[in-house]
Amino acid sequence: MKQKYDAKKWFIPLGALVLVLAIALVTKYFVLSKTSGEDYKIYMVAINDNGKRGKRIGCGDSLVAVKWQTVRPNRLVDVYQDMVGVQGYDFGDGLNNPLVESQLSVVSATVDDSGVARVYLSGAFSVSGKCDAERIRAQLEQPAFQFKGVSKILVYINNILLSDAIKQQTN
Image (cartoon, rainbow, N blue to C red; front, side, top):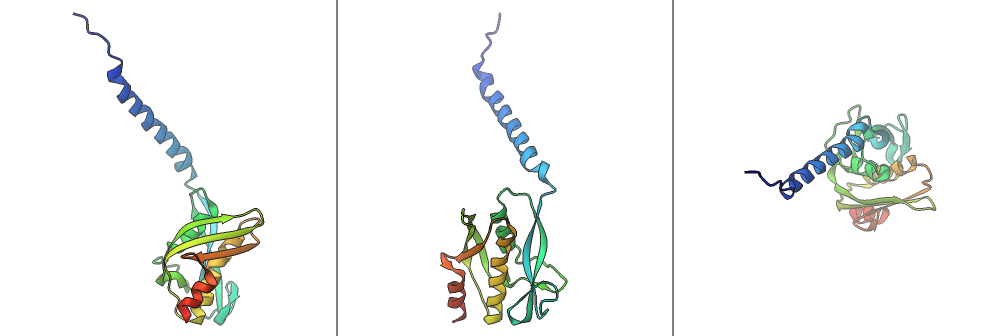
């Protein structure tokens, strides 16, 4: 007795196989092929360094660029995601992360046609005094300027402009 060929019973397994292969190819092309990543700068603070190792900022500190690598596609968002996500990372060499007491995440980061970068962060934000306020302000504002065309940066924390958010914390 001849068996009848049923194409329907092979449709779902064949479709699943094609989907798995497509995902594997996309992963290989967009993720694995970019393992070298792209280099960016995030910023940490050398306390009482007085501008010797980087840009001098309030209270006699230095804002120090740290080479960082990411493989994700949106560059401005990546830098801020990485920077607010490194609270426990030890940079050694006397570098401090003033955001260590904050638990922030990136909502969005964009640059408009006039060169204004807007970074929206949300979460718990902590500032302990005037010197810490200057460190955090520099650390959150400087990274955007490494991107071509950025002429101004506006950082918001929980939809409040950074300068106002700092004032709320220090009053």
